[in-house]
Amino acid sequence: MRPSSGSAAQLAVSPTSTAPAADIPAPRPTAAHFATTDSLSAYWRFYWAVAAAQLTRWLPREPGCILDLSGPDFRSAPRAVAAGHDVVTLLPSVETAPRRTLKLVNGHAPSPRHRQPGRLRSVVGDSTFLSGFASEVFDGVIADNRVLSQHLVTEASLAEIARVLRPGGRTLLCVDSVVLGMALLAEQDCWPELSYAPNADVLLVPWPDGTITRCFTAEQLAELLTDAGLELEWVKPRTVLSASTVEMMMDGDPRALNRLVEMELKAANSDDYVGVHLLASARKPG
Image 1 (tube, rainbow, N blue to C red):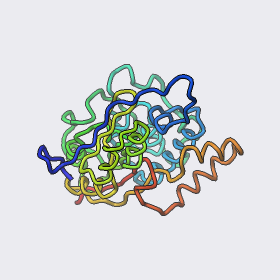
Image 2: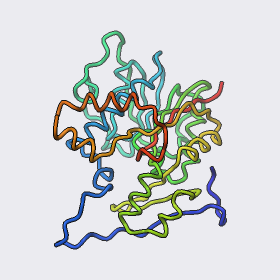
Image 3: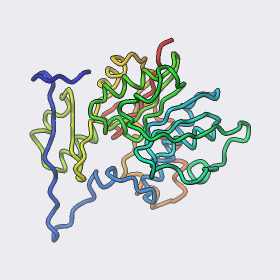
């Protein structure tokens, strides 16, 4: 669904939030879980484990050339390299380039023994417009870590992804869902904007740090992929378990992580009003 400059497209944007009074204890807000990726918290250890398992299942079986747009704080590039793929990872600056060769996946899992690892190349550039890459050169494009929600003109980014994919190539992407956007609006007491959020053509939501994210329903994401010339394979929530549920279960039993991950991977529910992040896979015809 393409945003319009006229009144047909509804834009839901709220003012920045105000901090609660110092003497009033406040519950931990949604933004506290999702505004930062604290790898030490129970929820984020669970989240990264689920993301790693989903990526492993998505990666092509045969070695190929993969473009990773997910950013330096995500772990998709080393995992794809360990699986035998040659990976070009796009970085925002030279300072964010890897400083050592990673021999472990996510810091704890060894590389597959049946396959030689691929090569990792770091390129500094803009992940919105992939003008530095020729057309039809990659077998896969990974746009995880909510990168397309941070690119507010998502249509342009998807068109570029479709351009650099070879016929038959696939893309894996993760975006913020309307569920997350509505939670953030509610926490900021933006009730008028919240009432329009589920039916908005384009939903833009500010974060406490001043950034803005674009949130999607599954139907909107599927339509954007189709408009970009890609064939949707599937779309589903990244996780269906809430952060509070995961933290409660792992606080009670630190060994519950593997069971929680298996539970997520077996979940068949693809209702976007369940998960805060949507994960989708699409294929370029040919």
